[in-house]
Amino acid sequence: MRLSLFLLAILTGTVAIGGRAEAQTYPWCAIYSMADPPANCGFVSYDQCMATVSGIGGFCMTNNEYQPASPGPGPSRRRAKHSSHSQS
Image (cartoon, rainbow, N blue to C red; front, side, top):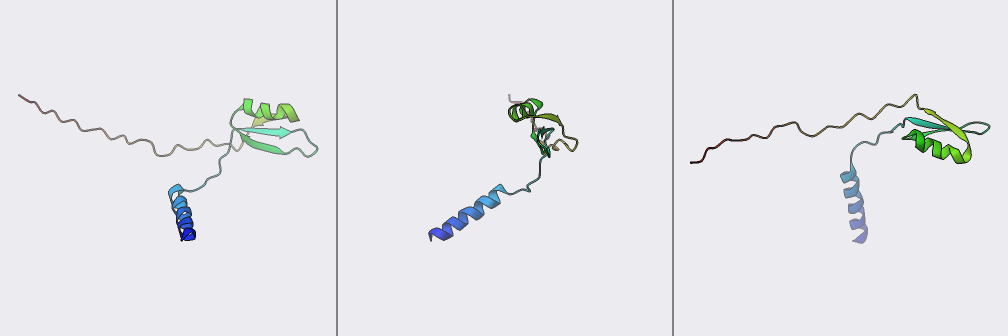
């Protein structure tokens, strides 16, 4: 009984989360100072990138592959209907 409730909870959570997972790119890359310099393009800001490389060495540069995420569907632009009833 507990196992079936556990499985039901997992399935319900998976359905509730839903949606497609998409990779996200970030605008800044850290290039570390090593023999074969690895790059980490997971920084939102230049300051965040610089804070990371300041302790281990390296530099930051803009990510050429960065594309800002497209905004999802916004709020509805429907206007509320106002009725003008005059009361006497």
